[in-house]
Amino acid sequence: MDVITLLLVYFAAVNITGLCLMGLDKYKAKKQAWRIPESTLFIMAIIGGSIGCILGMYAFRHKTRHWYFVYGMPAILLLQIILILAILYSPVQIKIM
Image (cartoon, rainbow, N blue to C red):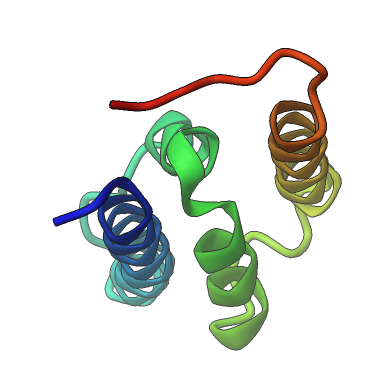
C-alpha cells in the first residue's frame, strides 16, 4: 500500500469515526445515559476527523448551541487545511521512501 492510499484510508476512518461519535453522543444525550466527553470529540477532530465531526454536528443537530463547537471545529479544519497547504507548497521537498 502506498503512502497516499494509507493517508486516504486513515482520514476516511477518522472522519467516519468522528461522525459516528457525534451521532452516538446525541443518542446518549436523548437517553440520558453516560456521554462521550467533549475533549474526546475535540481530539477526534484534531487528529484529522474535523470534517466528520462538523458533518455530525449538523446532521444530528448536536453541540450546535455550544460556541466552542460551532467555532472550534471549523477553526480546527481551517488550521488543518493551512497545514496541508504549507506542507504541499513548501520550498523544502520532503521525500518519503
